[in-house]
Image 1: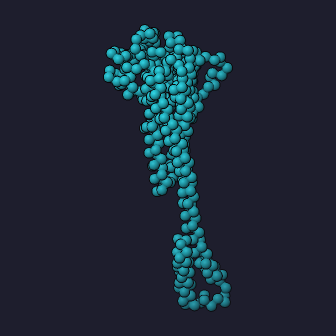
Image 2: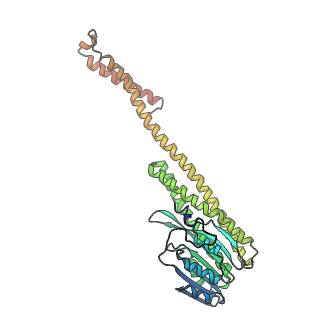
Image 3: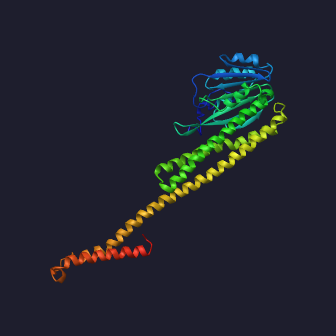
Length: 355
C-alpha cells in the first residue's frame, strides 16, 4: 500500500514551503554525481559537498547533477539556495507522493515523473519518484534512492564525444532522461504481458487459488502504472507546447516522439486491463464449471443409489409373509436386480450425454 499512498499526517498544519521528507527512506547517504560537458569536453565526478556545484552553475556547457536520496533536508535546502529554487518546489521534491506534473517558473522548469523497475526477488514492480529541474544550462534530477536507475544509456552517450547529446543544450538532456523513463515502461509492460500469457495457460489447464492471487496482483500493478502514465501524457504535451526559451524548437520534435510513446503505453495498459478483467471472469467461470462437474458426479451417484436404496428398503422391512425371504435364490437375484438397475441407468445417462 505504501506504493499507492504516502502518509502526510506529519505535515498537517504546517505552512506551505515547509521542508519535510514524506515517504520511505530508500538510501543510506545522499549520493550526488555531476556531469559537465560540451562537444569538445567532458567531466564526471562525485560531489561530497553541495557547495561544489556552485562553480558549475555558470560554467560553459551543460551540467547534469543527479541526487540519490531525499531524506537529508539540509542538502535540498542548499540546492535551493544555489539554484534559486522555490521552497514550494523543494517541498514537492521531498513529497514522494506527487502526481506527475510540470511547473514553469521564471528561470527553470520543474517536472515530476515516476520511474519503475522490476524486482525479480519479490516479483513485483518498484516505483520511485523522479524530479527534474531544467535550467538554462543545467538539469538536476532528484531520486528517492532505490539502487540503480534507467539513466545508464544516457551516461554512456554523454561519455561518447561523438553522440548527439554532447552537441545539444540542457533541454535535450532533460528530454533524454524523460525518454529513458518512458522507454523503461515498455520493459515493465513486457513482463506484465508474459504474466498474462502464463495466467491464460493456467486458466485452461488448472486454475487455483494462487491464480486468483496473481490476477489481483496484476490488477494492482496496472492501476499503479495507469496512475503514473495518464498524467505523464499531459506533462509531455505541456512541455512540447511551452513557449519558454528553455525548450528549443529542435528538442520539441523529440518530445512529440515521447508523447507518441506515452499514448502507445496508455493503449497497451487499457488493453491489459480489459484482458485482466476478462481473465477474472474466465477464472470465476472455470471454478464454477469445476464445481458443477463435481456436483454432476455426486448427483449421478445419488440418482443411481435411489432405486437401489428403495429395493434394499423393501427387503429390509422383515415382514413375516414375504415369500422371497425364504427363497434359496432370493439374495443373488436381488443383487442381480440391483446391478441391472444401476447398469441400465448408467447406459441411459450415457445416451443422454450426461456423463
